[in-house]
Length: 468
Image (tube, rainbow, N blue to C red):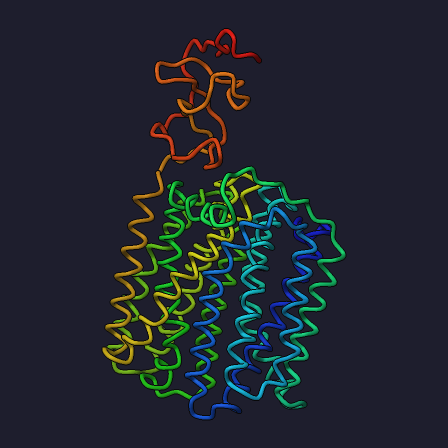
């Protein structure tokens, strides 16, 4: 058994995640059938609008929840969100109008936009050991990939026995079971965040955290690289399979399965890989491989179809899955190192929102280009986007990126509690520690490559008459 699963709290949380993901997969299949039942030939437009609503909810709601997450007990919040999702899923079979689908999808995805980053921010506090947390990240990636493969097969089996509206009952049961598992745990209490301003200022903090931290700016660029490569898989696979290779619908599942298999393989290898190499090296190498793979896809789709090109395309899809997993899985480690514990909900919420903004950009780009200019041009344009994003990440993320940074506090009084270990310097009180953006540190220090204390340190003393 992986060490992470020996922790009872994490074991219950992981089981809750897996069950909820299966329920979500069933809902995805059932929603497609419901849209076709109500809209007929316009079902694709209905589903496209529903996906757009999902992305808007993810981008807009997650930062707000991150801002207020410190006020609500984690367990109560997660259970309430699971029950909300269960209630919405239970209502979907009774929908008779298309606008009702849109309203319920917005409610469902709003709850998911609140649940996911809160759940993600809880795991590093449940598993403080780096090795255990890395295992948890890999297992989470595996859970998402297995869901994408298992849920459609499960839905197909159930549809042979029951009507599609019964699948929503399975979704409801999944969310209810997830709520029960979360309720059975004891989660860390949220740490109140001392930050001036109202909810808007707190919601904006996560974005400011990304803007001010070099490795987080790089992480956002890496998310864009993954979104560029992933868009051609999720948007254009059906076009590649049907129009270019002239293969049956079952081949679409095979191609998506190749992507999932590549992603799972990388997730299984990453815990061992990350013990030997730094996050930066692994993530950048994987991201810079994506435009090369996309260039190969452009060549394959510009070549006359055949058995060998089909095999190479499946290999390319698997390679995109593996590289994407190698970028996304360690992202939680990077976030954990870049935010104080009280700010983890805001950090994960900002990453959740900003990364989905990347997908909101690349999804329509992949769809419209494939229709207007063809698959080879689409792959080349997305390769350029991925290459530019990977280059930005490589130049933004310093090669030497220690956690402890020496820095000067010219903005704090000499007797401030934060400066108890500071020493005199010409520029002001100086010390070093694990550096993150917070209420005492508003920008990244210029001396980011320096980790040693100055020689002959002289303990800082408070001026006469200041007290303390």
